[in-house]
Amino acid sequence: MSPISRRDLFGAAAGFAAVAATPRLVFAQAAPAAPAAPAGPFKVPALGYAFNALEPHIDAGTMEIHNTRHHQAFVTNLNNFAKDNPQIADKPVAEVLGNLNAVPEAIRTGVRNSMGGHANHAMFWEIMGPSGGQPASDVLEAINRDLGGVDKMKSDFNAAGLRVFGSGWVFITVARDGKLAIEMRPGQDNPMMDGKRALLGNDVWEHAYYLNYQNRRGDYLTAWWNTVNWTRITERYAAAKAGTLST
Image (cartoon, rainbow, N blue to C red; front, side, top):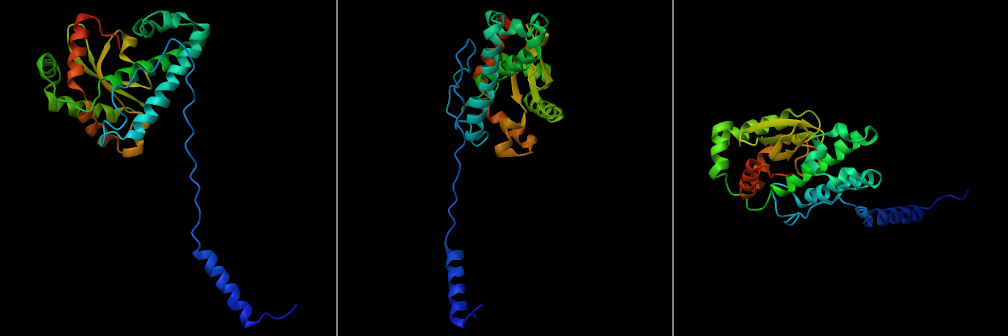
């Protein structure tokens, strides 16, 4: 083997330095597009505002993924169930969820999860907006009467949201007589399963907040109140007392 000269060593060192100084090219992989939604009787309702409309409280990325992928997955599942079981689309969602024992046993759990998720999210998008306002009129009166006032309502609602183990929802339910109550539900269960209606509700699955809040569910629950559309809540309250609230 021939000896290595000082010139060879210096040349090799220069070559290594040049390679080290060369910027590395990083190829970012684009996120896969959401799958095309199959045709069927169930659809994700129009959002009604831009994905970034609720920032900084809920970021645009979370809203887009939550709406176009998570909610769409529930709708896709329902449309697949409906291909062979059209009866689940022939009745109002509230009627199906309120009588799950009438759903064929083979698809009952799937319908419970997917239709519950569809109903929960349809309500969720509806009761939020970029200009939330404050509770007023009959809703404010009911909050003061049944939930101890606005501040106590928020504190108790947030505490309930923190007590949900794993994934689920926290709701304020409304009875036909207008009485309000705070309830927690696991998974994608919905108050309609017990013949009740949700005046409003917050999603405490991690996909609803993790991009921005990571494990700080409490911070998310507190910030979320800034997104509540109280004008729409007032309309839902009136509909509940009239017996026409369907979601």
